[in-house]
Image 1 (tube, rainbow, N blue to C red):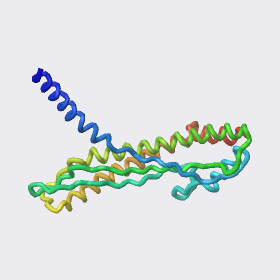
Image 2 (image 1 turned 45 degrees about the horizontal axis):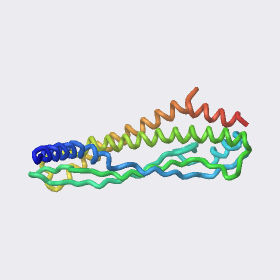
Image 3 (image 1 turned 135 degrees about the vertical axis):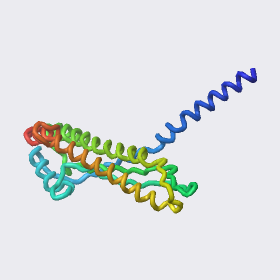
Image 4 (image 1 turned 180 degrees about the vertical axis):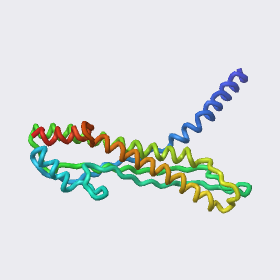
Length: 201
């Protein structure tokens, strides 16, 4: 009986040990926040005009909505036999979605159109959020366990980290730009949403 119990305990211990890397990887989750900016109007066309006047500034133009993020890391660098190793890196990711919000109640028909429009815009911004999360996952994969030889003060490794992070960040930004281009292009999802709102009354 005791040997059976011991074997069960051993199996349970092995199961826990096998699961540990997955659990450790899944520990962090992004914090998602929604902020709004005020718009006015009683028709779809008026609401969209107000979006153009009050939407968040993105470069030289105003956007319908915007996704931004703040990313910080808690990293454990360790010197080992003259080398430096990034033993662990835990991200803290805050994603903020900025969306339009009418300041006054809308007529019933316009309200229904607005809800469809806002749901579509929110879904679009969530895709941007997903690309940011994916970037952070890739940063983890590309940096945790990184070892730089002849770096006892862990200074060279930071330069290598900057190079890797820059490439991943640029890739994420390009993916977001490409996605926006398709969505706002001829027959794109955002273009359809805009036309439905403006022409819907």
